[in-house]
Image (cartoon, rainbow, N blue to C red; front, side, top):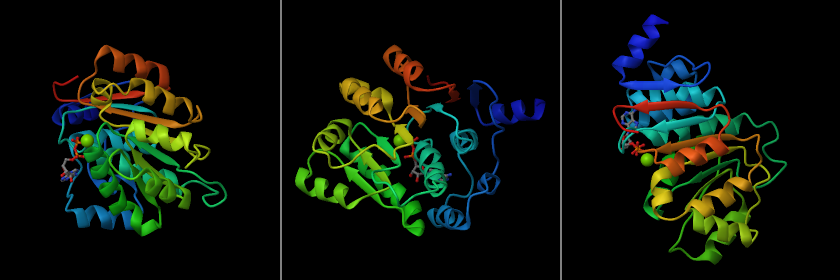
Length: 237
Ligand code: ADP
Ligand code: MG
């Protein structure tokens, strides 16, 4: 226990919550299947970043998480890698339709970046990733979603549009990520985010990442996460 707290200190992370799993030291510690390990190596990721060391075991254990760390700390892989494992763990992958993993991000640029990152790891498993954001043809996106996907990366407004058009159902969605939650609130997406969360079954796993935790985001986190573990990197938050 002393060793674990020393190790957390060396990573400059703070944690709170019940039964926090031990942080990992290497990607091998995660027990990822070989295709994921190969994709990690192909990316040139030698060892996990601070947030990844603690967030990966938390998310892989199925727990909800609040991850607070500044831009550039490696938050994307913290939710993308366990998402692939989560999807592969679904017993009846083919029987239902609609995404299993739903990721909301504040801007089309961010949504696109996450989409590219998710594709790198999803490809080897035949997991389909769709990106849905403003500035692209709604009809094209509608068609793409209708064709089916396991992961959707979206800006909140456009995802609401697609849900209204019945381009997708949230029937299979069990893994929800709110990335850059503070920026989504800054951009006025709180109502859309709340509406999306309300359409996803309550027994989902929920992950919230943010660079800062303003009161409104804190309040949302209290309302929509169950027994979350909070991981804070450095002095932010
Ligand atoms: P954040 O979401 O916290 O702003 P990103 O997930 O976008 O950060 O990651 C920032 C950069 O670090 C990206 O270029 C990403 O490819 C890279 N990166 C992520 N994890 C690792 C790692 N374990 N080793 C090396 N580079 C990494
Ligand atoms: Mg990010």
